[in-house]
Length: 122
Image (tube, rainbow, N blue to C red; front, side):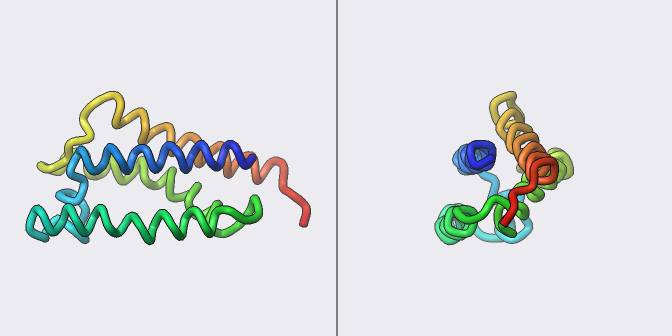
């Protein structure tokens, strides 16, 4: 199960690399109102504490709140991209971007299913 979780995290992190290329800060409600260069820097630098918390919190037991929460968010994240796809600044309009988004959601769902099907005893 660890490999499945880390594959999901890898897909998520790779999507976030693509998100910089695709100017995602222009779409997100928390950064879209900022001037371009400030929005870009806020978006990039917010990933340092976010990734730190995800790596630290997810490097624990199989059913930790971080692992389960990120896996659930990976599924919701696909829906958010579907919701925002008509935003005028949305640039995730290619196969590679969508493959990463969907792969992350699939791996999140697979991880939740694996934890539910084969719960680890404590």
